Length: 310
Ligand code: ATP
Ligand code: MG
Image 1 (tube, helix red, strand yellow):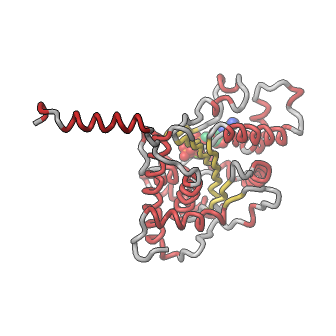
Image 2 (cartoon, helix red, strand yellow):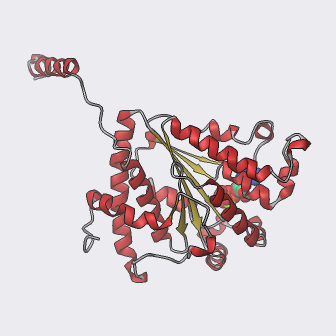
Image 3 (tube, rainbow, N blue to C red):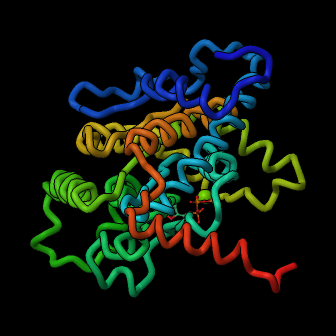
């Protein structure tokens, strides 16, 4: 990478693949969660946080420029899904990585436990309603993937879903994987780029962050006893994540399993993955045809000779 705080958006584009590719899963067959170290920072040393932050700033700038083209072209949309255990840093990643993007071109939706109305529909319904329009970036803070994660870990959630009893078979998870991959394929066929991030924090780092939430008054509001209870199901969650990623990673909708014990590194990888994939769309500002260019020239002439302006 460029030395001493001198990275710009063009340098970042060249580096993006290097930061993101090691964590990209496009074929889940051989994927094992234990192969990803939550503390990994590639070749950044622990005292190189400022260097990574400088790179992130360049990434934010690169993304802002790409988003402008995305918006102007109005053909593609980008759907970015974040999944993680509590305190892994979803909110911070969203806030930092998208900090340069025009708010008009971006929408974040958080999915919590489904409402009564949502339970009266198929599980994709509430997410389908929030898909990004062309030209926009849609962020899902949690998503339909909860249906093979929390719902799998706590089967009472499944019991509470109003599915016909005959459909609640042991095949339900495989079916959901298939339904999700089909849905994502459908989205890509419609010009929606789908990127999925699992921020992979270690159990020890999560404990540290929960304790900080208790000890630091400005973080007290983030603390939830329920989050602590969920830790008891840690291994079941890890199994559910592994299964989910194994079955739903695809070339057209990759999973990025991002080390999340160092927030500065997590954000850099997320920015790199988004920039790299959006850049690969080869976005361009719309080109005007001859007639439109002629009209521009006319407009210029008439503006230039507009006496009333002076
Ligand atoms: P934060 O804690 O940063 O506000 P969060 O995403 O953890 O963000 P919470 O309100 O704490 O938000 O948690 C939302 C909860 O809703 C999570 O525990 C999640 O697993 C749960 N949830 C999301 N989708 C479903 C679903 N389809 N069925 C059951 N529970 C769900
Ligand atoms: Mg929470």
